[in-house]
Each structure stands twice: as structure tokens, then as C-alpha cells.
Amino acid sequence: MNPKRVAILVSGGGSNMVALLDSMTADHPARPCLVLSNNHDAGGLVKAAERHVPTAVVDHRPFKGDRAAFEIDLNKMLEDANPDIICLAGFMRILTPAFMDKWQGRILNIHPSLLPKYRGLNTHERALDAGDAEHGCTVHEATGALDDGPILGQARLKILRDDTPDSLAARVLKLEHALYPMVLRRFASGQREPIFLQ
Image (cartoon, rainbow, N blue to C red; front, side):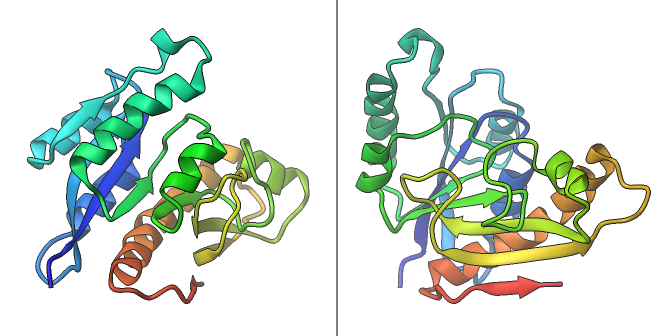
């Protein structure tokens, strides 16, 4: 069976993208076909090129808030690459329900909280402010609603007494790098049951 084709969308340095790319070797049921960014300066583009993965950019800035027009160009790049799976890996643009509907059932996202807690931004600060005992990250099927959709995996850690938002973010990021490749491998082989890492 041919490997599934994976497109990864990034806006910045792409550390989760690197974890995904470096996992797609040997008997992995998927292979990268494109790394796509909305930012010409995204460090992830360089890292993808170093790994001989095709890259492309659709800069959102010329569209000045016209999301539909931006997504027309984004869709064209994706259609040309013909992915079976799209992984959002630090892609810092909100995608419209129309875009999500087009790729429904094929988009994965990673979010730095134990969803359904703390959708959106500043998740580490919010977990600390709430006095939570645990925090972590979630990989889910992305839908038209922000940080929503079927959960495919979660990894959790205990919040330490001296944790700051930065220290917590760094510890959660290590969990993300372990969880996202695991979920992608399972998803690409047809497994949708969630996995939980402690």
C-alpha cells in the first residue's frame, strides 16, 4: 500500500514539524509531501528544505483580512500537493469553516492544553492561574470550531510548585514532540482511537 501523503502547515520555527518529519521513515505509513507556511521567514521552511521536503509560502499579509482569498491560494498549494493528511503544527492563522469542511476528516492539530480545557492562547498561564495540578497537550481532528474536534491523543504532566508559564511551556513542548508523531502514525494507518500518555 502506498504511504499516505502528509502536508504540514507552520508559521514559525517548526519544532513539532521536525518531530513529525523525522518520524516518517522506515515502516511509517506516511511520508511528507509539502511544508506550507504563511510566513516567508518561518524557520520551519529551512528545516524542511534541509530534509529535502518541498516547501511553499502563501503570505497572508497581502490579503489584508480577506481570509477567503488567502484560503483560495492555500487550497491551490494543497491541491497541487494532493495530501491525504494535513498536520497543523504551529500554524498561527485561524482557518474558516469552509476551509475546514473541504478537508474534513484529514486535518490534525496539536494544542498545548488538556482539551476541552483552555482553548485558544495563553494556555500555560491559564493552567497556572487556575491552580491546576496537571497540564499537557492534545492532538485532535480539527474542525471549524477553534481547538475542537475528536481527541486522538493526550499527554499530561504534573504542574510543579515552582513552574512558570515558560518552564511549563518547555516541558509541555517535549510532550508534544512525543505525542504528535505517535498520533500521526496511528491516524495514517487508520486508527482513530485516542491514546493517553502519562
